[in-house]
Image (cartoon, rainbow, N blue to C red):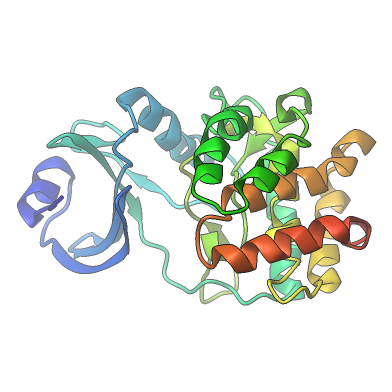
Length: 288
């Protein structure tokens, strides 16, 4: 799909638009950087299955957060007619203010900040939409599709069957994929979370459990307890969770490990997943 300078200027209050570079492109979506007389912006072409109603929910997070005290999200640029996005051809497109910076390094300082930010996000009340990210649907449908492509598909599904029903756990406003890869560190050291595609009210354990295997357990079977403790200690200083939630963090992380296994080096990720199951207690011990 091509987005021209004319289409951008026709739909948004920008002039002098020049395309800079593509930031992400795959069969699902396109993310690119543009320059303009009004500054730099990122335009995002939503995934083809995103409906207008779904994108309305996704993009509503930006003005919602902008009106409060949470300062860790990009700002949305509304269209000339005041809409959050525009329909171009058969796809929906929206623009965000570009965040100058780089992905932060995997350090104790970074994860201390991320823990604090996540606690603040989870403490926000009154967001009106639930996330469309449904782990039960993914387990029952996407995991079966994944298993059909894997030589170890039967073992894969057996592990999936051990996962709890995450919808039964306490809920809050979740990002669904927090980590350095979805974060920009600005020149002043402050962080901004990006990729809010599945934001909404959902099981808190998903956000908290996500990095336990994918970020705090390497593909070389090395644990990163210093990073994990920095993340969880800073979170728990701001916000507490129940014993049941804490006991489910490994399962939440296992869910994401299963979901993302088909991307990257599948065999290596499977080995890490298998190793993680055999070393569940040492991994769980990284949560203070």
